[in-house]
Image 1 (tube, rainbow, N blue to C red):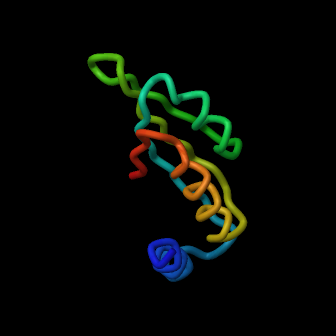
Image 2 (cartoon, rainbow, N blue to C red):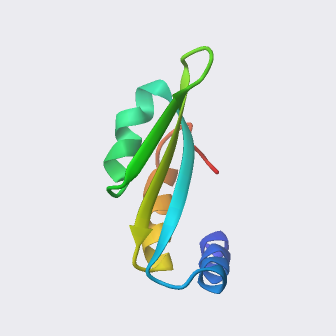
Length: 85
């Protein structure tokens, strides 16, 4: 839990809320829909890996507070094989 507390502190130092935020994830292709289900609405960009096994998903969205960002990362962390950037 210390990781998310540190992230919250850094986010609150850098951002004034509400603010735009860019989420970036890499997931196995078969987990794409699972990731999209936990993301808030916003502008999504997708890029398939060369082999087609993985997909990179970037999401630009407006968030109200650092707690909203932490909640997304916590839900995403439950997805097997995910890499959060």
